[in-house]
Image (spheres, rainbow, N blue to C red):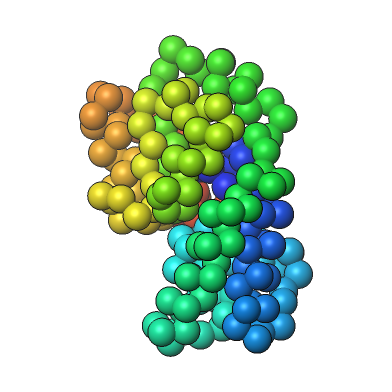
Length: 167
C-alpha cells in the first residue's frame, strides 16, 4: 500500500505544516488543493515545489520548519480512511507492506499511533534502503523476498506515481 492518500488521510496535517513553513519563511500560503498537487514524490520534492525553488539552503530551511511542525501536528487531523481496517482484514492471509515516500520517523510514528503498524509484514519509508517511488526496486525486492510473482501482487495507491510504479 501507499500511505498518504491511500490508507491514511493526511491531507490536512500536511497542508497545515506546509503553510506554517511558508509563513515562517515570509512566503504566501497555498490552498490545500495546490499543496495536494505537490504531494507524492517525497518530502524534499514537496518542500522544493511548494517553495518554488531549487536552492538547497532554502529547501533545507523549509524542511526544518516543516519537520518541526509536522512532528508536533501530524496526528491533529490524520485518520484511517473508512474501510481500511476491513481491507487489511480481507488480506490478512497475505504479506501486507507499506511502501511510501514519506520519511521516517513520520511513517512509523503515524502507523503506530493509528494502531496499524503491526498489520504490516514490512514498512518501507522514503528515506530507507530503496530509491523513492516510482522506482520499482522496493516493490520488486519485497516480491522476491516473499516469493510472489508480479501477477499475484497488488499495489494499492492513489496517484500517478503508482501507474509509473506498476507500468
